[in-house]
Length: 391
Image 1: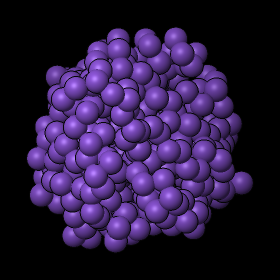
Image 2: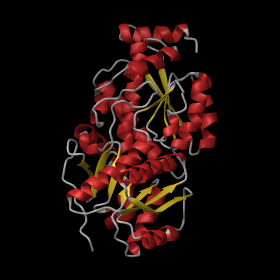
Image 3: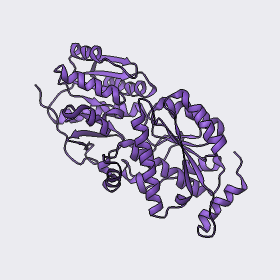
Image 4: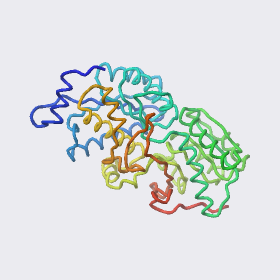
């Protein structure tokens, strides 16, 4: 994409003499599901980015005053191409942030790659940075990494509490995210010599979890590993507990670690574990600002996407141009260790040659009362894990 004289001048003014002239906006696209079944995740992500921009302005970060957010709603993969085309062709965005859902991100990044416009995502699916694309970056670990950590960290906590894990159940939605993360769980179980007594996919948006719960009961697993977005996570846990099935649940991030999980399940959330990319207790100052603004704790996607946004803005600043190829190179070479990035495990955002994070590591969280506490690994933990006693 050829740089225009006007935006080159804008960036020069913003970087070299910010008080000398009024700069034209530096447009950044936000592509999220703001309606539909995963809308809560999209809204949380947008809230995090808006707070990140506000705090960047407060500390006088380069370009912060000149950023204009171009927001598009893409509730499904089919909505992504047209939304991305509008942002690139009509709005002239220099980069795209989004989309929470891996399936939507996969569809959107096909367009951003062809247009040679960089995109930074928090989506998990392995395929995102596994296709050899040059313009897509993941601030999170890939899904198979989360799946392996979901099992390995749960087993470590159980064994420390004196329990043995010999059988597990895996149930996952049949999206890109669910399928990839279940693959990581499956491989980790095989490596550990743990029997998988249930390994079942289900379609996103189920209305009856009884068949899944009946399969769990028949398998008699020591642990249950569901990988799902919010509505499915609520239905699975509620059905298990209402049917008297007390098997420990180890959530697969997504629907298990946002405020709406507690709102939907009440007392059933207590002591539920989940793997997570980060947690708000790793960044208490930012978390306090977010809760003051929104009345709930800061979900992981708000922190992750705030960090992704800051990385993009800083890369545009360092590139000093609207040439998106040069911005892409600046993203790839930049290690950002300030702002929202300090609240991520590893304390920075940075990428390897494929565009995958080179610093992130999964953590384990547990529901305590109305919030989540980081309980593993020990170097990140804010409290000891509470392992349920056998019935």
